[in-house]
Every structure is written in structure tokens, then in C-alpha cells.
Image 1: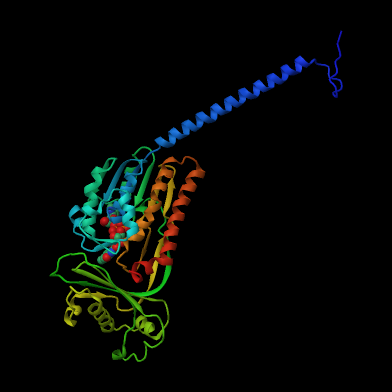
Image 2 (image 1 turned 90 degrees about the vertical axis):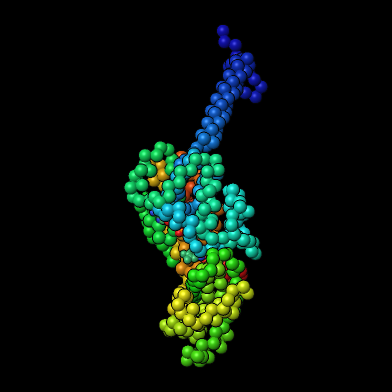
Length: 418
Ligand SMILES: Cc1cc2nc3c(=O)[nH]c(=O)nc-3n(C[C@H](O)[C@H](O)[C@H](O)COP(=O)(O)OP(=O)(O)OC[C@H]3O[C@@H](n4cnc5c(N)ncnc54)[C@H](O)[C@@H]3O)c2cc1C
């Protein structure tokens, strides 16, 4: 006999309350078991992922022992993601250490490099206005002397050019690789690896001219930068009447370099004033030489002796006329090659350079390295198409930003405001 039982408000419910309760309990039990399984799966996956992320490492290959290459090496070796570093440099130790010209690291670059173990107190050079001035060869010698203190093994291959054949050698290295091409403005490394050599030329909206002076009898002592703004030149002696009286902002001048190798940069915001037109169009070497000679004698440091005409004629090289200042930016600065599991990045002048010396040229390269620690971290860990693409776009975006910042402030910060 079927006993029919009715729950108030529910019609035709034939099961007794105990059965319903049992069903509910079973359902809850199933739900709990599923939740436990899912939680355990998620927790294990998170643990495994975290472990894999912590363990993810790569081999870094740095090409070029210029100031940017050596700084890149420090960043890579201290990233915690790199198991070993290979450094290729085509020049010999002697050639590197004898590089005569001065480099000036601005305060931002100096602070950045200190974070990666660069001790400026132990490097020959001097501080002035927050910048550290040293000779390029001294910087390279110091940096190479500390690579053996780094937490990972560094194999330094001086006198070894990175060529197409080297690319094939890299394929024999197991695991993920990161090639950091820091081989300067004429470097070919990224091209060997298959990245396009396309550049965008940005106008810096300035005209400029440069001069270099060598005084063979003097030693290479770093000297302070000398700057002057709003200069106007009287060129009436060259038959150029009234060229200066046009109300435009004048030239900015910077004198920099060591006591032996002195450089001068002259800049004026892009305009078509009669004076600027004359200096851009008329090729009169004596006019430009006289401008640089007068500039040097007026704004040199007190300890320096004045230049005579005959000396300038023999020892001063200069641009014969004003040219447009441009920043060349490599279009592709980061890439990934799946077949060899290799990331490639261009840094320093291999990524961007401009056609005038500012006395602080190296800083735009160091600025590019600010995004490197995060990039290396991401490059070691990424494992899907999506994460690889976002890693590359992070680096490209940072490289783009460095150029934008330079176009907005760079020349003013490096020359005009010094
Ligand atoms: C005459 C002169 C005066 C300057 N004065 C100043 C100044 O006063 N202040 C300042 O801040 N900057 C100055 N600079 C600029 C400064 O030197 C550069 O901005 C800086 O050196 C760029 O650094 P980088 O590491 O990107 O390239 P680089 O210094 O050019 O280094 C590239 C390195 O890569 C190596 N290399 C190239 N191809 C290969 C390859 N295939 N295999 C292996 N190695 C390779 C090269 O031998 C080189 O050592 C001056 C430059 C010059 C030329």
C-alpha cells in the first residue's frame, strides 16, 4: 500500500521527508566533494605554477662591452632570473681600456647603476652638479673588474665578434635564451638574428653644429661642462648684414669632454631666421671655425688656455654648417624566436641614437635599461602566446617611451639646462 503524504503547500509529493533530506544531504555532500577537488586542484596548480615561476631561468648573451652593454650585464646578472651570462666584445681589452672620451652619467643613471652594484667611490672620475664624469675606458675597466663578483658565472669573450656563425652556436645552448644587443649605432647583431633594420627618424626640432678639439700635449683629465644660453653672433664681417637682429632666441652652447679631447655643441630651436638660414646654407668654413673659436675662448673654464687661430686651423674639426638634429629610433627593439626559444632585445645606441653629441649621450641608453629587470622577469616566466606577446609589447612600449621623453625634454635637459 502506498501511503500518500502531503507537505503543506506542496501538492502530490509522494516521498516521505526522510528521503528528501537524504537527497539534499547527498547533493550537499557532492557539492562539498567537488569544491574540495576544485580547491585542491587550484591550490596544487598555483603551487606548481609558483614553483615553476620561481625556478624559471634563462641564459643571457650580451653583445658589446660599451657602457650600455656592461650596465646591461650587471642588470641581467642580478635579476635572479639568469643562470649565466656570455659577453661578446669584438675589441681587445687594451682597445677598450684606452677609449679616450669622457662620459657623463646624470644623477638618474648613477642612482640606477648603484642599485646594481656600481660603486662610483671606487671609480676614477669626479662628481659635478649631480653628474659623474669619467673616461669611457675607465668605466669599462671598472665594470669588467667587478663582473667576477656577480652572483652568476660570467664568461667574458673579448676580441670576439658576434657574427652569423655565433647565432648558430647559440642554438646549442639549452633552455630559454635572451640576447641583449648593445653593439652600438652600427651594430649588426639584431640583423644577424633576423630583426629588421628599419629606423624612424624623429626631428628634435633643433638645428645644431659640433666641434672637436684635440690638444695632444695634455692628459685625459675629466673637466666640468661649460654652458651658455641665448648667444647671438655678429656675422657682418662675412658680408651677412643685419642677420642677427631678428628677435629669435639665440644659440645654446655646451663645452664638454676631457682636458685633451674637448667638444662643443651649438644648438638653436628650429627656425628660419636670416642668421640660421645663412649658417645652414652658406658653406663658409672660416665663418663656422670663428664661431667655435670665439665660443671656446669666451666660455672655456678658467684653467684652460685660449685657442689661437693657427691652433684651431690645425686641431679643430667642426661641422661646416648647421644641420637638423634628429633622433633615430629602431622600429623593432624586441622579438621572440620560438624555434630556438630566444628573446632578442636591442639596447643603447643599437636601439636609438641622435646625430649630435650632448656630452650626456650615454644616458638615453641607460634610461632604456630601467625596464630591463621587469622585462627579464617576464621573459623568463612567460609560456603562452599571450604572455610572450604582452612581454614583447611591454618592452617595445618602454623603448617608445624613452624616445618620447627624449624628444620632449632630452636636448633641453642634456644641453640647455646643464
Ligand atoms: C668622440 C665621441 C665623444 C663622445 N663624448 C661623449 C661625452 O662626452 N659624454 C657622453 O655621455 N657620451 C659621449 N659619447 C657617446 C658615448 O660614447 C655613447 O653614447 C656610448 O658609448 C654608447 O654606448 P653603447 O654601449 O650603446 O655603444 P658603444 O659604446 O658604441 O658600444 C658598442 C660596443 O659593441 C662592440 N661591438 C659592435 N659590434 C660588435 C659585434 N658584432 N660583436 C661584438 N662586439 C661588438 C663595439 O666594439 C663596442 O665596444 C661620445 C662618443 C664619441 C664617439
